[in-house]
Length: 174
Ligand code: APR
Image (tube, rainbow, N blue to C red; front, top):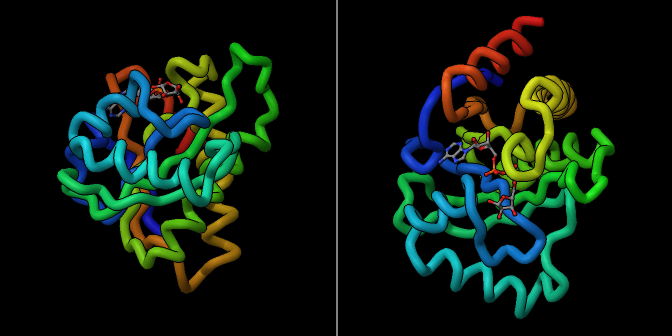
């Protein structure tokens, strides 16, 4: 598994699946969630509403992940995950590690060969980007060790702004 750090807009990435930093409602929001819904088009919200009517009547729990098609995005799939919200007292790193691990598991089940993550919880949900980075890389490495011959071959971290890129680059080398 190759890990790459990229500066830019995750909605423009030509990978098999991109991960959305969603909220439990799955009905859209700001940040990367808003950007993904805008780029994917209204069918994405329809697909999320369908999930709420069927598999996920109570919404998606923190640390879980679920896939929908990517519709107008270059990516074939969107894997929605709900990060812990520090402002709501959700400070357990295991919850955030679960977002990355569950998203990788969904990507593996889909047969996605390339996957792009944003800095889940490092925006509106108030987590420190450095902490997110170290939790993310640890989760990806563990997944790779447990799934040596399956799962995505390429995992990108697509970050907004050079400061966050630098924080992730430092964490990757640490
Ligand atoms: N591409 C890549 N990264 C992005 C993009 C984008 N288009 N837009 C924002 N980001 C970055 C932010 O700068 C931040 O570093 O993604 C990271 C995650 O930020 P948020 O999108 O705020 O996600 P999060 O902190 O997990 O908060 C989730 O925000 O958008 C709502 O509905 C969402 O309620 C949920 C909450």
